Every structure is written in structure tokens, then in C-alpha cells.
Image (cartoon, rainbow, N blue to C red; front, top):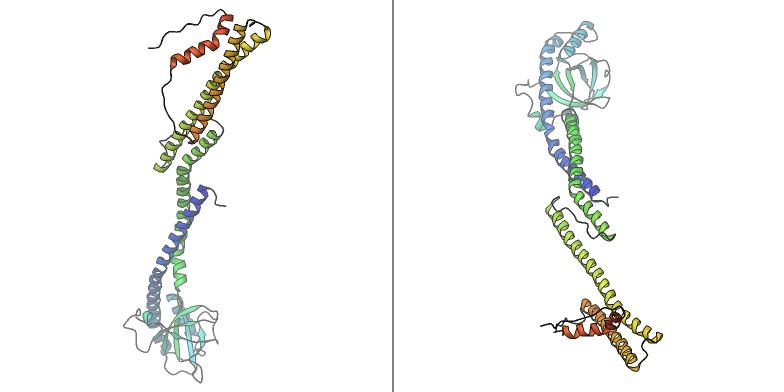
Length: 364
């Protein structure tokens, strides 16, 4: 699946981007406590203002059941401060729970709730001038949501012992969703697009010279020994590979050319004695060499050319052993005059038939 270099670049960039975003999210998560604290302080201040605006009205009034107008006033207070107003009565016997006698939104009446104290770190965020009889707690509503509640004790009443102002509590996860989720999603999207673009650009920058190298190796394997790579593109390592490939291709081309030249020279060297042998043997067959002297000469030339071919074959075998490293190369002097005279003797018969005069000059 990730066999190509480009796909591996894409995978590596995706992993790096994912790891970066994960670390970013882990670092950002504690910061979501800041809006949670801010929301707690703002909600507590709102609850205190609503309490101050309503407590005198509630203390000076009678039973809620007997004063419908009072419930209208409480509803106006709740609407003005955007809070939920509750009138609570403790269970008998006391068990830590209270029963909702009045709800400004008319959905919790008659339901029990259990107030819980705030953690110490959150209590430290509350205003220091909070009246001693007032408590700020949290509770879980009948529908399962978490609420922050300010409770104000009332003078003895027949059906109520406290009023409470409640606002929905902002959890850390909700604060993260509300304040950070959208920026994080945008960051993920932008990072993914940039990572994809950079991965494609970088992989193309690196794989393009490698693709050219692949094309060059295919051409070399197909016999195009003159194919060369451009050495001025790509990273330093790729440039060195291209340079070394060009050197190798040049050596292969020279080797192939030397091999072709060698085959041509060997073919020529073999053709010369074969021509002499064929000519003198044909003279013997046709009776052109009828005298004993001519027959002796023909036999001598044939013998000489046969020895020459034998030497040539042996030289080819020696060359093969030299190239394989089986024997060391040994240099020695060669008598060129003797070589030329031997060549003339082998070719004199053909030259005579074609009226060609062969002459030699002494080599100093």
C-alpha cells in the first residue's frame, strides 16, 4: 500500500501533523479551565444580583400558594437576570435533599434535588463579600443537566424554607467546545491542507530526479548507452547518484564500443589467414600449383597461416584469462619487421594473381 516513495512521504507528513495536533490539543485542554472559571465568576455575580433584587420581595410576602402576584414578580426577576428561580423546602426528616416548591419555568415543581458543595478551588473564585447565610452550590437537575445554585434562607414559612437562583453550569468539555472547538477544527483543516501540499511538493521535488534515474536505467538496460542524466537538479545526494550514473553509463558505452571494435578486429584478423589458406588450397585443387616447388610453397603458406590462426586463437584465450584476472599482464618487445615479412609471405600469392606489387621498407 505504501510501496512508493510519494505515498510514504504523505504518510509521514500525516503522522507528523497528527502528532503535532495531538500535542496542541493536550496543551490547549488545560486552557479550557480559564473560560470555565470566567463563567463561574460571571454566573455567581449574576446570581448574587438576582438574589439582592428578590430577597426583600420574598421575605415580606406570604405563602407562594396564597400570593399569585408574587409568583409573577419572581418570574419577572428571573427573566430580568436570565436565571431560574426556585423555592425549596427540605425533606422531613432531613436527608440532604430538598423539594422544589416553585419553579419559574414550571418543570421541576415537586421534584427532589440534592445540592452539593463546590470544590475548594472553585469556592476561592466566589466573591469574598458573600453574605454568610447565602450558599452557592451545584446540583443535578431531574433532566440530568448540571446547575449552579445560590440559596437564600427564608424566615419560617409553611411551605418553603429557602429561595434559590439557578443557572446552567458550564463544564470543561462544554467550555472547550464553545471557545476552542471551532478554532481547533480550522487548525486541523488548515494543517491537513498544508501538510498535503508540502508532502506533494517535497515528494515531487525528490522523486522527480529519481524518476529520471529510473528512466535512465531502463534506457541503459534497453541498450541506449548514450543516455545521460542532468546533474543540476535535486538534493546533493541525488546529484551525486546522477553523476555516478553518468560515469557508469560512459564506462559501459566505452566497454561496448571496445567490444564492437574487438569483434571487428578479430574478424579481420581471422579473415586474412583464412583467405590465404583458401587461395593456396584452391590453387592446389585447381592444379595451378603443379610443380613440386609451387606445391611446397602452397603447403608452407597454408601451414604458416594455420599456425597464425592457432596463435590468434591462443591470444584470444589469453585475453579472456587476462580480463578474468587469471594471469598477470606481461609486456615484451615484438619484431615488427618479422611480422611484416610474414604477412607479405602470406599475401604474396593473392597479390600476384591480382598483379599487385607488395614492397616493404626497413623499419629503423
